[in-house]
Image 1 (cartoon, rainbow, N blue to C red):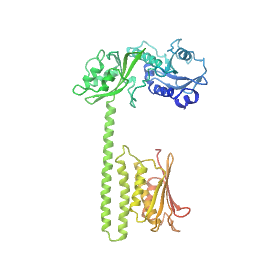
Image 2: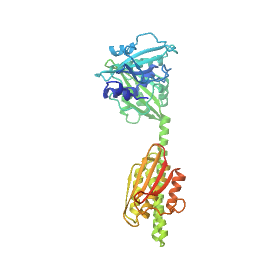
Image 3: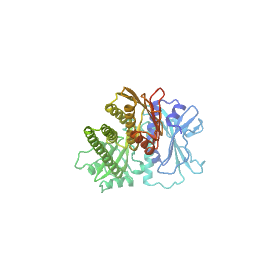
Image 4: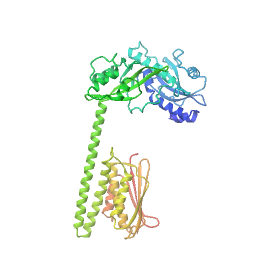
Length: 485
């Protein structure tokens, strides 16, 4: 499915400012669809005719278009309502319902103007399914009047709001709760859901006729300084969002000023009770902080274990025993690095490049043989369950390459990393003395390589290969399945 940007750039002469305005419009026109109980289609003049570049269905009523029409083209002159709205720069509501689809559909068209002084850039087709038509309730009449005002704002270039702050990821919708305010900020209509939200905040009187800003402030900020954003939103003077809280109840408010014909005639305020949502968010934050604290404590405990092993190694007189303890210190240290990173991350995901670089640095610092170790390529983001064994594998392979590959001579080790959507491939290559002629990974590998094989093959379900490097040295190749980043 082509995107709005793709269609506009490929089929029209509209510029980047026009495209940005259309993006702002379609990001917020669910509001118009729901208030209208109607489908919306955005048409732009293209080289081929009129091109549909975006579509929205209502959540408050039946749809007219069950199939997507984005990408459809109609020739100039085939849709008279679109032509009239475009040529006469006005909202067009003429004509009888269309019965061609088997159900009555009322068609209207709204010209889209880019800002108050900008050009007209598109036409919105508004299609209402009349199959369930009946005497409208007061709620529906309020919705329709609000939709009419909002449509006029689109035609005048006043909606979407150019100066508006970015909306929250989940702004209130029409069905969550709606208040209509007059020019003075008094409530002229309150939907049942909006009234219920204010009841949970402690309101006992009726909202209709009250000044919303003062009422909300009295409910939530009786003994505290009043939030400035609250007064702007609750009075309907600025297109903003805010939240109010009282007694554990959290209500989200969004204001849409209604400015028609150059004057502010009132405002819509969408209301949503987000108490449970915020409670769950707080629980997740608490859980996240607990997990990070656990990782921090595990890291501290591992560092304590490493320190004890290091102390014991210094007292060990048998060289083989001292070497074994030092290897254990490095293994514990590599796991500690992963937990230290997880203690700082908001999720159980880690940017592994930093861990790999720290493992490389640790290997170079503790190595008896001078070595140059460098990484080429990126590991990307890995889940903790994969990061910990890979850190240990990398530690073992680098230690083997440095200690056993160079015969006490300075050498170079490369960690070559490549990653596609679901596979991580790592090659640890050195230019050292190479493998013994009778080497067999299954038979005569040391403890470090046995650990590597167990982790790669057994725990990570990957593949491990060790082979002579062309030109001298050894290459160890890992192929590990990973989830897409």
